[in-house]
Image (cartoon, rainbow, N blue to C red; front, side, top):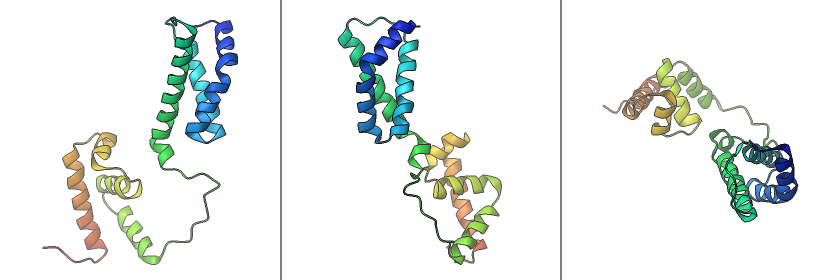
Length: 159
């Protein structure tokens, strides 16, 4: 673990660089501050010595870019909308309420895969990883759930 003096020196020396990199990647001051803290906590915990000041600077830049990319890849971030863009959504039409009701009445395993696939946008392999199931099991459950929904909503049978 690095000393307080080393960390303070690094913050003073690299703060502007880290913030600028974050703002370019994230376009958001709140996320920038989060990544700023993450970078310097990693610096504090990093024990290996740096070969030169250029090596230290390159390490901080690389850690900053990786932390920004990790945040942008985060599943929860991809599925959110900034408050400035959020608008009051009108009530769904009756047919959508019927579909939602039918999904809610599905057995638990089917309800989970349908929700994750259609409402959250996950693929079957992603759902398998989340639920700890085989990918083919997820495909089977999606197929069976579609059949149950078709029956519940009065759709045509394919047989």
